[in-house]
Length: 204
Figure 1 (cartoon, rainbow, N blue to C red):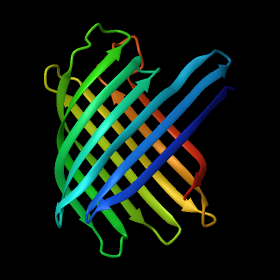
Figure 2 (cartoon, helix red, strand yellow; figure 1 turned 90 degrees about the horizontal axis):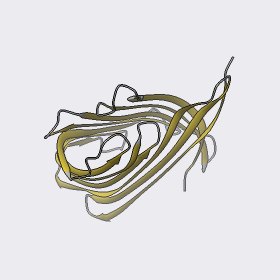
Figure 3 (cartoon, helix red, strand yellow; figure 1 turned 60 degrees about the vertical axis):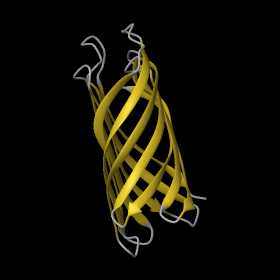
């Protein structure tokens, strides 16, 4: 038998600023720990992303993101990252699905508990996102981001899959599976996170 406590809060904002362009902002706070029989941390993560997407042709998109990460499980005191990408954007005229696959480069600076390296570094990777409508009330979403550092072969993965359903016009429910991986973490520390959560969703 095991006792746990925790919470998870996700927020997102999308606003158009031009024909084919939009402002995007997301924030996520996740905390979970075992309280019985012995105390242990399962998740302690703050993730913020702010940026913009701009369709340059009918099926291509340019993406810019400013990212901030703090993770107590992975011993990341802070990571600030700038991401630039250009790639594929497929969508249905009736908005039944939206798919983006964007290769890109990023520059980042991080403060790690187990490392004295605090210089700027760079990496190459890609961002993928799919949104599909099952019907008028239910949608499925998946996002996946991969980065491989240039200087040292260290990989970072962030993946989230959601099933969202609306109960009323403003309130619904969300089922989420999340997987995160950091290969830079030393063997003595956890280097991956897997969580499954169910919660309420509010849409404004």
